[in-house]
Image (cartoon, rainbow, N blue to C red; front, side):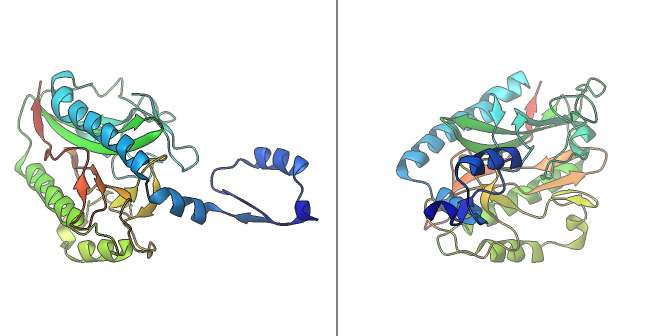
Length: 284
C-alpha cells in the first residue's frame, strides 16, 4: 500500500522524536533524505523573496554603517545547522573576537561563560584602542541577510591589522566579481585560495588551527543555506541565489578583522544588498 512506501524527509533538521511521532501515523518501509532537493529549491529566490531580502539588506546597512558606530550596541537569527540559532550574533572586543567556539565561522567570542559563548563578556569590557568585531544577521519576514563590520574604539589599530583588513576587502571584491550564473562555487574557492600566500593563510578564516573551510554561504530562510563557496559544492550558481561573502583573518593579540556582506548572484557579478563600507569605522 502507498502508506508503506518510502517517505523523504529533511534529515538534517527533524528531531528523532518528532520523526517517530510522524511514523506512528504514517508508517513506511524506508526513510530517505530530501535535504538536497529542498536546499536547492530554497537557494534560488523568487522575486517576492528577493524583495524582502533587499529590505533586510537596507536595514542591515543602516544599522551597522550609520547607527552602530555611535551606539556600539534584533532577535534570533535562524540557522539550519542543529543547535546554532544565535541571539543577535557575534560581538567581540579586541582579542575576545578570536576566542574559539563551536560555531562554524571564523570569528569568536569569550561570551558570558564557556557554556554560553554569546553576546559580551563580563571580564572583557571595551577598552580604548580596541578593535570591535560585529557579525550579526538581520531578519525580515523570516528571511535573513548577514553582515560583519569592524570598528576602532578611541584609537588606531596596529599597521598589521589595517593591512590584513585591506587584504580581506580586496578578497571580497574578487569573490563578488565571480558570483555569476554558471560559476562553480568550489572553483571560486580554489581559485581565490591558491592566490593567497602562506603567511596570510596562517590565520585566514580563523586563527591557527581553528579555521572555517569556506569563503561564503548561501542565505535566505536560514543563515547557513547551500551553496557554500567551498570545496565540494560543484553545482553551478544560478541567478536569484543569494550568497554572504565573509573573508576574515585573525590578528594575534588584536582580534578578528575582515568583512562580510550579502550579495545577489547577477550576470555582471555579485551585487551587495547590505552596503559597501570597508569597515574599521572610528567609533566612540
